[in-house]
Length: 522
Image (cartoon, rainbow, N blue to C red; front, top):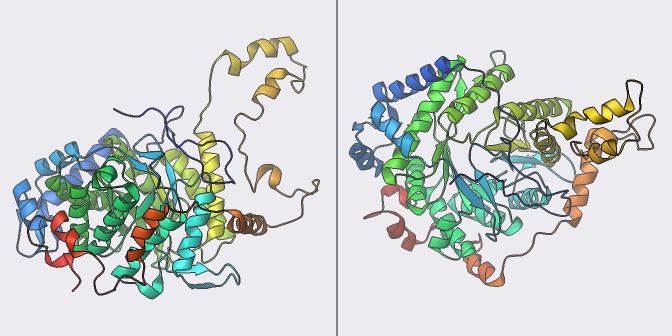
């Protein structure tokens, strides 16, 4: 049964009133395409998979799964997926999932009716909190980002926002999951390159939740799988199979770059993205019909003048169109360009792009915005950008409340009583409603240092940075239960050998028959 009310939870001491991720109760999204355009793009994606196919690295269990599902599997890894097979997979895919926090006491609904805000993802640099200079990221930086996100009321989950660059191996990936578990109570969004890392993360999540069935009943994290356009490597294949079998929700999608890895046109890039999504969804449904595995490819474009990712107008329209097409299929859109910037540091350029892209989310209504805080074309993470995004997410949620139209809101009786030359300042009606739709921004509105105010003349960066330092110095994440923490100790970097990052006992449980060659380190 579809949930009608959002289940939100506060993040920490900085939280105002209890928030909700519901966006669909009082306003509607924007749809840039007409119905004929939606239908033609969908048909093109279906026929691209049927005629040209997608690449699945050969030699994995996917060969047999896709063949049994009715696909044409060639020896070189090209898999042609008949239109009816893709349609069947789309029909059986789960449309929603509840993602629960660490304690299992509260959840966010991943569906078409809610939007959630996530810091991310996988940056390889951070701005040093002391010097402000960019440097390689490490485990301590991921822990700090997770703790700050835990304190922010309008940040709803936590992703691997930055990497422990010094340990870019399977053991390091496992430790990143452990780092998230230790430093936030919020639901997790995880991604890794190694299927063995996912297997170990599932085992860790079972320990946190209290067993395999408890984790199935209350999923703790969503796995993000990142293939190339129309090309699934063995590690991506194994992650989808693992997640589908164990009940872990999955988002699978690529970053298509129009003009480079996909056609330069908006419609052509959308077709490429959707075809990539559908291929992964077909595999998941071949493993377990009804699995939550949703395509989430990002529509991006090459900036012709530089060759870098850019072209904001194209990317914005593509984002809106992708969200519309997924709504047409009743699928949540697990992607959005919102909250990130190509700017090399947190400056005026970054504030413009973050603000513009998040305001676009008001119209596109993605289920998740999971690039919040990412700067420098996805290379460098900024906590100041995350705090700005949190403030703007609050603005979106205030606007999503919509405009109520009833006798109380129309206020005709009061208008007649006051008359055409009256003053509404002293009216009880004004006092009753003056704050009901106010954006209680931490940095803008009354907190802008105007010339006629007594506020210090501080730049936006200074105001945000002062707030950040307060959070970092005061917010404490409740510790894990002692018994759970003790069982998770063996997954730490000091205990987990980089040569054997996953327990062998997991392999037989997750994979039918002998383990495939991608399930152990080579």
